[in-house]
Image 1 (tube, rainbow, N blue to C red):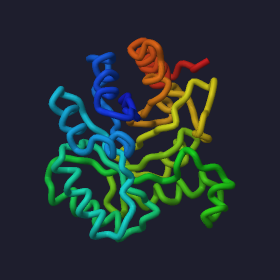
Image 2: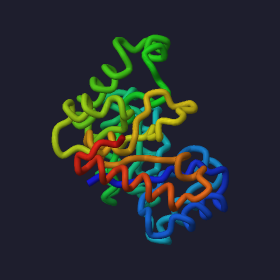
Image 3: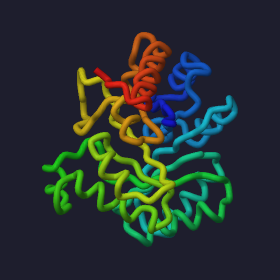
Length: 236
């Protein structure tokens, strides 16, 4: 079953609390990214845990192995249920992250970021990645579990290829979910229905819910889309 994760890309804790309050029991999982974490620090994670929510800490750690290992250990002790590292950091970095996770013993899971949803093939070429963005995502996904990650983060467009590249059980987190009416700075997007159909375990949705005049109604619509995807009903 796919889980809905609402991205709290809010500028401050008060704005984040308003979203969580508006969604109530509809949503269990929330993503805390670099904007909110930089503004408020670890307390925002504690606030969510204190009201019974689960936290996807999406800070995309990407540094030398010892630094990433230290950061992952701190994130685990902070209470993150799921966290991200960049697979482009390489084997030693991801192994260090996995070792820190295991040492913490908190049950935190690590997912490796393959290729950002803002990438297209031109960006892949620009940064020297061979092949298409989708090919790069599948290659990195194939190494994630070998290096100790619990799964990966990938764009909706890459889901099928990534699922085939991963052994079971593996966790797949899918951001870049849009309704089809607009893509903003996300390029390789998809619908919640298609993401659920193609095997995403966690479906991350931000602006379509948080920028809505009625966040609860928007979340209910996304959950209905996910249900259609899981049961094989077409999204159109």
